Length: 73
Image (cartoon, rainbow, N blue to C red; front, side):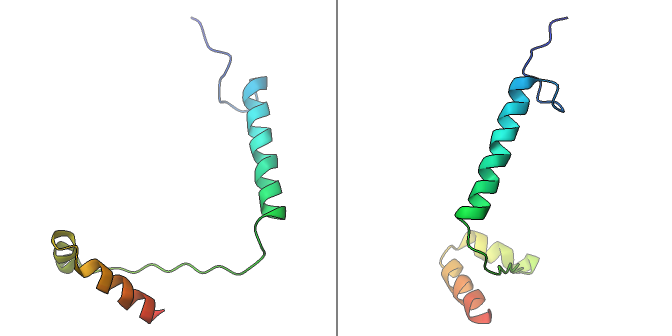
């Protein structure tokens, strides 16, 4: 059975390991030099299941929904 050398598994393949190492280094550089150290917030808004049909069928309500979410925050 022939197995390709580009394995994507736990550092067994030198080329895969090198790619992952470079990606980690690039991500660390971006985190240190590009991204600013500011607090972030995440919000999740939900719509009752019966109202989801209205928003799915008539897209005009989407803008009003976004504005209501913005005012809530």
